[in-house]
Structure formats: structure tokens, C-alpha cells
Length: 111
Length: 115
Image 1 (cartoon, each protein chain N blue to C red):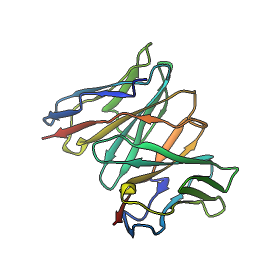
Image 2 (cartoon, each protein chain N blue to C red; image 1 turned 90 degrees about the vertical axis):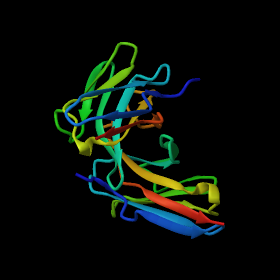
Image 3 (cartoon, rainbow over the protein chains, first blue to last red; image 1 turned 45 degrees about the vertical axis):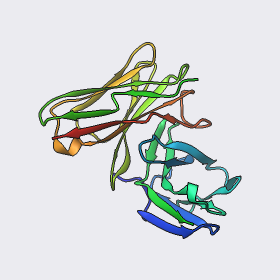
Image 4 (cartoon, each protein chain N blue to C red; image 1 turned 180 degrees about the vertical axis):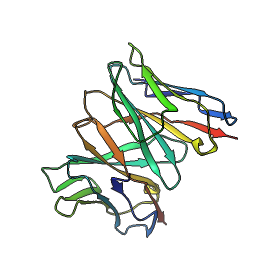
């Protein structure tokens, strides 16, 4: 069962513009959310996280927004750079040790 | 500090065979999780081990099993391989009992191809 969904398999943006990646979840027990970035032939690397008690967390060019009532989170990248081109996975954690991932969104940032 | 090490990196097996994949977590990390990545399905959770005990298991058939040793190294085994088992298998380790307050560190994965 897909408890974490990324409905856009791909996204293409122009360098310098904003990239918005979306993620929806169904399990209201999730209390911690993370975004991972994955380059080809590499394992996912941690990007940014947010606790369910917050609605926003910012780290440089990356901001994650959480809307608990809508069970929706998003990752904003501003400004987007060609090096940001990768697959982005949204992940949700509950019970402190069970992490579930979305299917991923392939971001392409065009120069 | 060495990262998460998965061996082998690539593997080709035939249907019906069994396979064992290995994961060495970051030193000091006691939690190890396994994931299967396929195009379209993303990362699917297989199971998680902590201190040699399986704490969580995803929705995979019993052909998928794992274990963790006292040094936190973990193995996963897939028996009676099927073509649909072809995927990238990723292992992740984390420092604390849970994943909250710490991110999971992933290995580069083992690419399994079943022919």
C-alpha cells in the first residue's frame, strides 16, 4: 500500500526558477518527514526534514512545507540549479523507526 | 568515517535461485533497514533490524528474509527468485533506535538482475 505518494514522476524547470516537489500521505500517524535526493548509481542522500509540530523548515535554497490537515508536504528549491537535477524522494516516519517512501520525482533543471 | 557498504554492487541470478545481499552499516549505527527500489514503485520498505531483532517488516512475501549480526552487519536473502525481483536493493543505517532526529544513511545499493 502506498502510504506516501508523489504523483508527479517528473518535473522540468529553468535554471534560476523555483522547483516545487509535492508529496501526499495517507497515514495520520506519520510524525516526521524527510526529503532525499538520489543521483544515478548512488544511494539516496538526506536533504531536509521536518517534524509534524512544525509547518516550515528552511535550509539554504531548500524549504519544506508541511500541511498536516491536508496531509501534504512540499519541497521548494529556490533558485534551482542544474546540479539539483536528480530524483527526489519524500519519506515519512511513524513509530519512530518505520520510514516509508514515495515513488520519487525526477527533477530536471535546464540551463 | 566509512559509509554504509553494500556487497556485491551488481548481481545476476536466474529464476528459482536464491541470493544473499550484505550490508555493513556505519560504525556505531545499530539500526539497519532494507529497501527495494524499482522504477515507478520508488523505494519500498522491506524490513528494519535493531540489535539483531527485526522490528518492522514491509509487505513483501516470505521469500524475502533478513538478519542482523552482533556487529550490526545485516544480510537479506531472497529465495526462489522471480523476474519481478529485479531491482536495486538499498540498505540504510541510522544511529539511534529510531529514525527521528537523525537521518538514515544509505549505501550505494546492490543491483540485482534476475534472468
